[in-house]
Length: 270
Length: 248
Image (tube, rainbow over all chains, first blue to last red; front, side, top):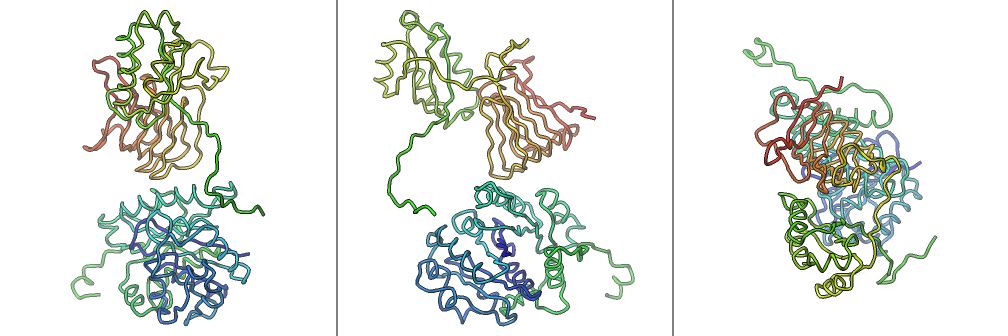
């Protein structure tokens, strides 16, 4: 059974592409045949994060227009053999995405035996974002612990419930997961940031995980490596936990509690 | 599989919902004043709504006696942002005036939604406006950017109303959850309409066009608490009041 997962947020810069990269890599590492599609036509980024930008020959729009087939277009990930990348076009815009075209691409990917199809949504609520979520079975709503991101996530969940194929056909609704990224337990404890429980409470969507803010995320992105591959890193571990929870395991939340350093620690350094 | 339809044009008949302003025989100025009052102190309650002016309660003689003044009504509605699309009645005179103004004229009574049987029982305090005929129930949270309008009905939301969402009813609005967005009751002018929320944190509440915002924060006894919002007619002009309610 194939599952189509959209990674969406409404707001830009909250970590959709980072999450798409790590989440698809995580699923592939667990042995699932996975493909990640960049829907951000015109602002292609996923290829950079995945480190395959020099191997892009054809793209999603070429496939939709019938100028290339999927076998030619899919790029094998260099870290995990079970993962393929379907890049976006940089020279076109979102109008190049048609519902029929996207539906055919997803259907063909399912026929090729991909178990998970991860759709990396562009920011916004316009065509690109709607196309990315239309065929979703599940949605990962990426949210930063701040009010504007929460509101935009709320908006995109509404759109998901109105415009997805499942919603339109009146089937079982799209399964929603909340993923809070760039979380700082200390700043939440100091009241500078919404706490993860506040965000979950505002959005009323089951919490899949909390990814701590980490410098490694940026470093990994710059090196073209999904952060989930980073060793002994909090963000990587948190993404691993999310994969486990997504696959039905129970894992306690990590990196969400802040303990004040003791006086000795403060005096002599941790 | 059906062949995809590629024709550049399809023609279908669409039914649109319109607000109907039914006027009873009265002198022109009285009717104008009544309509003015109904449109509310804040323009926007009916704005962008298509509307029908219904004179079917008038005889030709009454129309002549009181004067029709269709142009005056049309201007009044236009100023409130309402799109007058049709005039109804039983008068050739009315038809001529409507035609002059480029409005559609329909002879006969307005077709309105049949009230539910229990609602036809005379109510002890019959509001001038027959609202609350049915109840629309929403079982999902209402998300930011979503707008729910219960036309001619009460609205019940079983869940939260997020900031940036709008819940509107011609009757009452009940929110069994956190109300963080906007709630507008009596949108068609029913000043008896109320809003109830089990957890009040609204951006804006309005009844029959009277509204309140909360830039300075919520009153202590209402913040995140069960609250009733109603229009207090005891003072002039009427004031929208928040009232803490005990639901335990």
